[in-house]
Length: 169
Image (cartoon, rainbow, N blue to C red; front, top):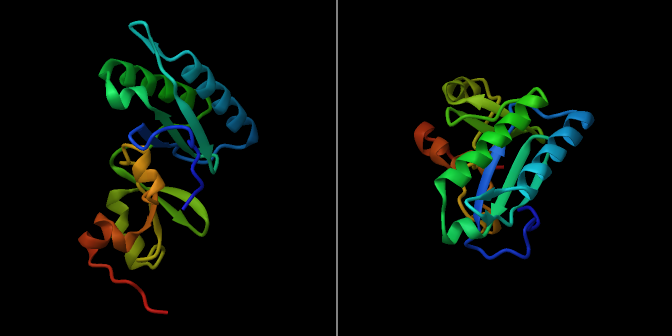
């Protein structure tokens, strides 16, 4: 489990987990982080200023937390923020992962794969029941703090779909 990157926020805080299609180099990381910082520092909608915090890990994984949107959600404010994050990703030559892709940790690196590739990856032994899946569907900090961000495939929908079993050492 990762350390808590948002220690001052309550468990109910709204969380977004986003991934870039590939890791950024050092210059791209600086540009991306500068863009994200600018977006979140200026994040306002209909007079409401948001109090977002964020962390960028592995030059590819972005997590944004915002406590006010857990209490009073605004679809327009969220959509606006997500469009701006997509724009910043595009400006550094990347794109955000889609719902048809899964993020796996293979050999210590994050890899984005199409869901349609999973059967082949399992068959070839490229991934196995212990391969970690990064769950981008987390909605709040409680889930992150409970260690739900990265879980072995066997404990996810992929494990159920493909009948994976825990490997015995």
